[in-house]
Amino acid sequence: MMGSMASRARAGLLLAGALASSACDWRPFEADLEDAGALAPPPETVSAFADDAPPPETEPALSDPPERLGALATPEVAPVVDPEAAARAREEAERVAFEAAFPLHGVTFHFLARVREAPRASAKVVGYLRRGATFRASPRVPGVGCARGWHEVPGSGFVCRGEGFLVGRDPQTLAPAPAPPRAAEPLPYAYAWAPEDGVPQYWRIPTRDEEATIEALLARRFAPPPADTETEPEPETETETDTDTDTETETETETETET
Image 1 (cartoon, rainbow, N blue to C red):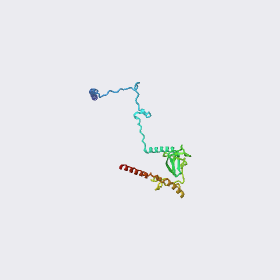
Image 2 (tube, one colour):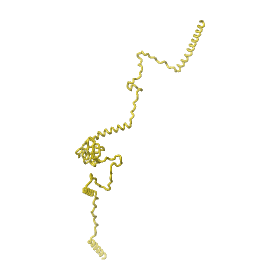
Image 3 (spheres, one colour):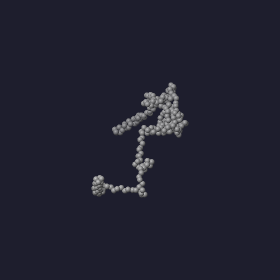
Image 4 (cartoon, rainbow, N blue to C red):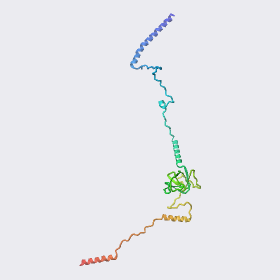
């Protein structure tokens, strides 16, 4: 029993010595750190129950507006434009505009129907439409010289309804209609070469008398102008009277000289 108590006393003395040694060694080390500025002053503690304590900062909610979200707001990204979709939208807009400008349908029933520069019968002819050709047309526009009204066609031209053209709200047809042009080939129609100028164009096969009459008219129209038959005046010649007078003058002059 006595031995156990002695052991405890010795252990207590050793522990007290160790604590004293640590306290002696710690104070100079802490002072050195404070002199070197390595230790920061302890933070100020604020009571949570103080009246003047600022409210604790909270993270912004996702339902708040973007200006309050700050850095958490996702920047807007420009949408990626599909070139093919943009081209299709542009074509659709052009189609709608074309349908609004030219809602009517037309067909040509003359072999060569005239397209004029302005809605006037005296306007310049800017093109032709062949028999059976279909086209789109605008509603009736003001003009003169056409009983059933003028219509504008794509390409800045005007056609007279009834003067070789049928115009209506539905697609127009014509029977019998000639073969349509071969748009995929270099020459869309059948062509022939005329070796002479002034070849007549007939809407049907003419009779012999009609052909002779037309050829006579064309011969007079394309005949060369008549040659100039006016002759130049002949140069003046000396008359016999003038010659005799000159001879008499020379004789008198010679006689005076001899005298």
